[in-house]
Image (cartoon, rainbow, N blue to C red; front, side, top):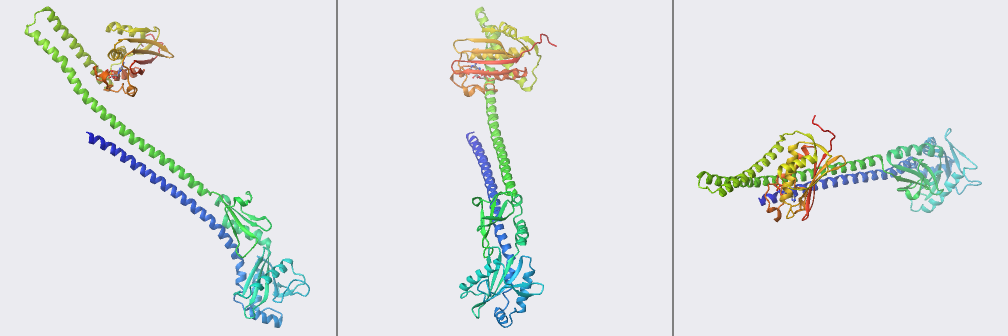
Length: 534
Ligand code: ADP
């Protein structure tokens, strides 16, 4: 029995542990998954900034690359001899001047020092494919060529490629054509950037294609001109650019030297959804786990109860058998003596008669109780509810049973109950009050009206019920087990009958008790105005 008991607890523990383990694993997996989603979404957002800058840089690269295969030395020779460019250079300039990115294409020979009187700066005319010398080149072009000239003169010793390009902010892209043999600069090409096209058409298109809108991608992006301190372009006109709220910023390497791309990452709709779904999943998991745990615990408790009930029933059976046998044995012995005719003394005859009478009454009471239980169990209790004045019922019961009690009965409250049931209920309560009422022998019965209910209270000043047992006294076969109750006889059936019958008649039963000083059972029924049975 003991082994069986411990193994049940062990199994319960294992089951719960497995459940907790599984739930923990699930929570862990869900959270990790969410973290991975967040991480990959952030990575994707970061990548977009680099992607954008690379795309913009790429737009400028063909111009530089076009010069790489050309022979700069030949250019120098042709220019010196004929004041013109070789055909392959002309072809490249023609291609560049057709690119909408550039407003105009300029060329200055290597001898260029600065703009001013006598300086040579030529504009490439696409229609005729000729270079036309201009007296007053645009400022931006002069600045650009001046800038690259200074820079390249410093670098030229170690520089290995035949072109070097330099941006003058977003105004010009300047290319120095380097002749490595002669260790000099053969000429400069200055490409004037068409900002109407570049800033108004090209960049917005590129920005939209990489960053989309903030609603779609969760990114607010800006091109910021740090030299001027102003925003050149953004995909999110509703947001203001603030340096400290920016999540990431990146310069354009080598190009557009005064600009940087900055981006702020918000949560994307995908992330919001994945977050919500995480919470939904956790909630569902929590509810499911809770349900499972409570089901397991509930079933376990139920099983424990059933077992306890089964044990009590077995004990009861043994008890009942014993209880039935005692009066029968007494009666049998008395009967035998009488039958033998050996007893003739009238006082002894009377004593035997009384014995048989009380024992048979005891037997009868027990059988009645057992039958009551069986009937309430089967739901086959005869039930004839009628309106009664509650005080009358109590009076009649006291008269018929010969019980004595301290009564306080309010006379006007009427209830609809089955009279036999009421007698059984009251009988059981009074019997208990006597059994557990201690030495005072006090039994109080009170009928009162409380709101819309008629209340019957049976009070004793006896041993009381321990608090931990209060809830259980109405259970079938339950008896408080201690030294006080051990002296009384009973099977734990009376109160279960009281409860079933009270509820069958639409009433409620409660108990209040203080250990060592007394108990009050309180039965209440709804009050009725009916005076006759229908
Ligand atoms: P029984 O009296 O046959 O044991 P009951 O169902 O009538 O069975 O009562 C169940 C248990 O409740 C009793 O065994 C007793 O421990 C406790 N009990 C009932 N009535 C009282 C009372 N008036 N005072 C103290 N304990 C009581």
